[in-house]
Image: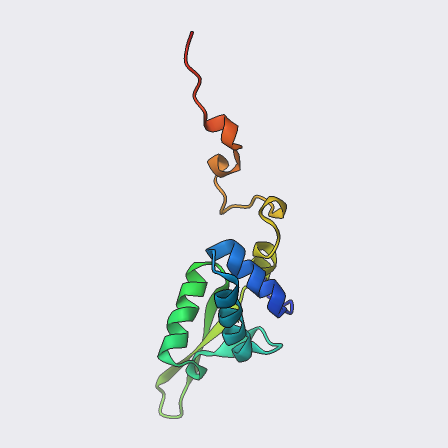
Length: 125
């Protein structure tokens, strides 16, 4: 699910396709996110300020990111959790394709796959 390198243009296109962001805003969001990740796929949550954390939660809800956590124990026996953010490279690559290129998966309902002409009701004779 995770593991590929995401390029700026690919991420911008995915933001435009999935969320409907205008090009300039999509570039700003992609630049902001990719500046945190660089060539990696995971960052520690402590790096984020509150505004960027809100953006990351929004992107998580949109399928662009995921979270993970680790727990370790301190010398005094207390547990300590470390939270991480991950880019969902599979979804970003999928969303960067043209809509007709996106394959149907478990998130797409059967009614979403029907063409528009199927929704037209004809009058009975």
